[in-house]
Length: 331
Image 1 (cartoon, one colour):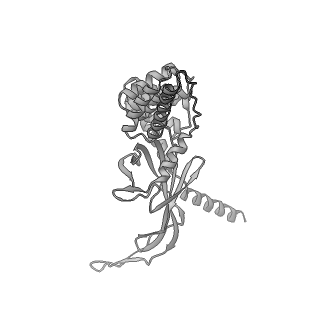
Image 2: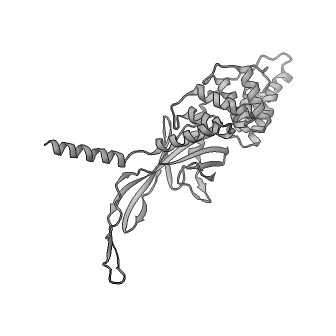
Image 3: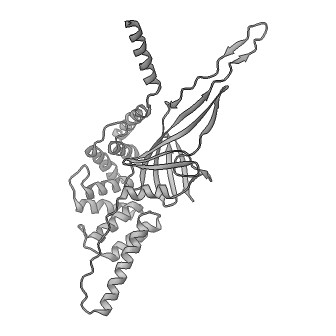
């Protein structure tokens, strides 16, 4: 009886290992590599480490450490880090809120033509946070962000423009108009980008994308992002073994500057074992029988990763598995 229990436990353990998610291992390796580079002064790695602390990739979430690494890269002139520092100071994320310092870093990013920095710098003028409220200056920076393709800037530019026009008309009709107060709708930034991702039929090299909503892939919203799956079963073959599978994509870490992460795995749905492959022997040697590969059903062990950034409302750039860059476009 004891032997049976031990065997059962061993089999259960082996099954768990076979189905283990390797994504943590991959991120742990990346984190160790990036830390060494960041400590050696590599600016891009300092930015990456900040993001990994912010998102909990390869390490636990630590907003204070994220801010510290962004701050180091920002001091070296890295524009995305300057934006991150400004935004974290603006929102009080991982650091005490400080509008004056936030304005300094957002202004640096905005003047380097970084669209998310231009947008949030415009919002400081719109809301009168540290900067005196000035709709004309807000429109100036919103237009630059809009022209650079920042997806949130168009609607806000149109809204502020309409407000300014209405205010000017009131000044003509009434010498002493009452102050115009417009109730601003609270916008969930993550919901904005989520809806943008869901709204388009995304393409990769002119064909439906596998990793975003497209003719091949359907997505549903989740509290932490999106869960996407292939609309149809995909046929595959390994050796003489045939199988069907679908791709399961999880999109998370949607941020205010248009960045998000995704992981995807193949989920095997059905398997038809193939006949063994017989390789004839040579010079009188016996034939060699090679069994067809065994494929388990369910989610496969290999986990691929995508780190993506929204270039504009119709294009996304992703780095796949920390090595290959791919472009996704929206119809």
